[in-house]
Length: 129
Image (cartoon, rainbow, N blue to C red; front, top):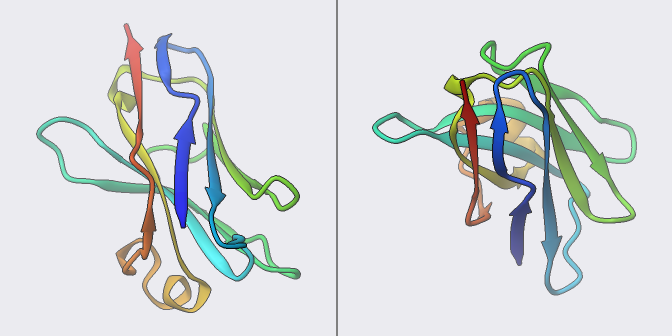
């Protein structure tokens, strides 16, 4: 299973970017997984910022306070892709962004502290002031 992020880049403060996380390999789908976006800036700890629980009857989402009202996570089942729409970007959003997947059960009980089984290699987001 591979998770591949894309969509990062350089943007001015106040701008927008949309990150994508595509899953591939051995018929894997995001069904019954929770997919989260994490970010890590140089010298800082990794931070879970957004997640979506994916099933036929559930699309619940969770956001860190630092991105709430600015970022939106969504999933496209047909494309096996999870998106992170980032609006009103700020210089403090500059970081490497990673997507990761864990079972919905683990997510339900542990949220961002769950052990995420699958990780992408990341995409860099740089916001200039």
